[in-house]
Length: 542
Image (cartoon, rainbow, N blue to C red; front, top):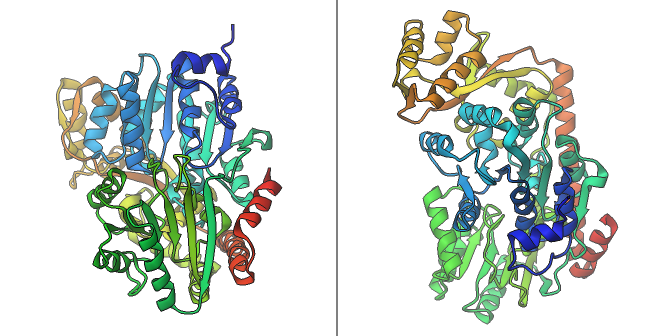
């Protein structure tokens, strides 16, 4: 007898008396081995939709998330319920591989949380998932809007996920996919559907995209001084409440995250700054302090807030214009998740809008610039047939080049053939078979690198790493330090036609971003009601 979504809810979450919004329809789809793209407001219950089908199927779910803190939090909640769950995010590679080897793959339901960046480079993780692929009943991709190339939250490694799914499950063997986000514009929705092989009928959109408890408004100003004075008045009015203030990058002398935080602390507010340049430990500390109420105001870039589980945020203030209605909606939706009254206030200065537009416009490119990036990549990786690269190191802070790296792959100019550790000395033999393989590899390299040994032995890198991972899993080899994972790849010449194709694709998406930004900015410039505009926009998408 087939279990219904309602029966599964009563079985696994008896404390929840009924489904909310579109939860039931999504759970029913997944129980029937169908995929879904769920568009639902922050705090509306997307977590239940990915957990319940997996629990009922007693299988394993791979949960892909860009957020370390959220991975840890959700894994901890599942573990507290007695459900197997591990979060690889934030772990050192050696520690992550040890945790992965201990995961109870053959038990009942289990959840494995990881980031797209780790999936791109961690060959042992991919090997483990390939070996256990029959146990994986669902792949959940959280914050899927991050795959939208050249968008405000773009994470280049998301573009590698379709190729990862092909390698692990085979092109025709993908398990059901659940893609989650609060909202997508039509071009981004099409991109997600294309990359994850979803049909228009797989899209499930919330019936309540605008929450009734959230008061949205804006005010326009003709000078930074008057805008900052208005910020002071607003925060004084809401003193003692949890508020996110979205500000400029830290480098901005008057409106940067750190300058604004200092200004507010001088006025007696418990304010902290948050931006992507802070060390991970400091970002974790700020988020934790805000959650428990030690600090009440976070002055942040867009790097803060995605996926956070802090229901009692009472307000969101924008000092800079978001790029689109979708980004605005994502960010204001972080207030009032507990259902109590909350506000979102946008303090708009037209000069900020002009600067923001110029920043987007600066992303426009040419085929010559694409070809130059290709030449620089080839120079940095050498001219050998087989090349290697660590994307996280090579492209740190260079999302444009990282995105091009994936564009080169999609067009066939780059063919990644293997992923694994760079150096032999990360392993220590623990058995005769492990000793034999390591000695054989060491005898064929002067540099101690796997790639050099593979070249000398004419050994296919994918086969070579597979032997290493098999011996690691069986205990014949022990990982004793961080593996320094890399990608091994071959290249073909990038043609002028391909470079022009890449530039055209980039510019088409940048032009769309400019169009979306102009539409959003026009609301403030013409004095329209932001709530009415959003209501009409979401009504047209449903």
